[in-house]
Amino acid sequence: MEKELQELKKEIRKLMKLDFVHPEDIPDMEMYMEQVLEFMDKELSNNVRDEEEKTLTKAMINNYTKNKLLPPPVKKRYTRDHLIYLIYIYYMKGVMSISDVQKLMETLQKDDMTSEKLYSIYKKTFDMEKFQYFNVESSVAKSVAITEKRVPKDEDEQLNKILLIFMLGYDMYCKKRLIEKLIDEMK
Image (cartoon, rainbow, N blue to C red):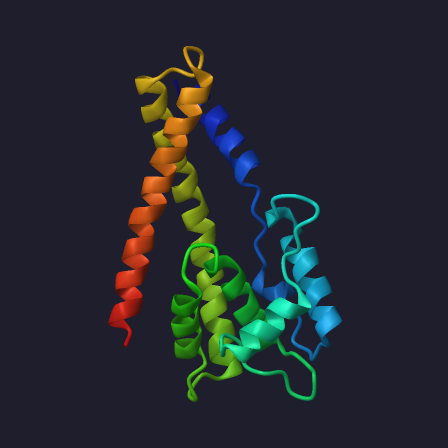
């Protein structure tokens, strides 16, 4: 049973194949738009669903700036702070509404937020993400096991997959609702 669980976790890891941007890999220098796009593509390329998908586009960055999710560049140059904000936006926009991401980014962009403090927050986030990754892996493995008990894959693979999708979707929905409540409390 333990060996099967380890194999399952290995398979889940392969399916999730997430890239993380290590704090020390974020350059502490000014960059132009094209350099920002190259950096994000290089660092997050394993997170895209297919080869056609871009992690970030010029239009997206301009929209984030226009909608105050991202501070405007200074003389068309972006800093390490901008990259950190873009990384947060990249991950959060898939699970939160843009208005909720905006509220979160506004909180991070308060006047007392120094570059050093933002970098420190990002490092803490990164350290916590590493642990959370394995929590997610275990949670998915448990969902797979529950689904397998209800409808074994070898009995009906399609139904097994559909039930797993519903289980994972319900999990995400519950967590999304919690995120929304926490954001609402930040006001």
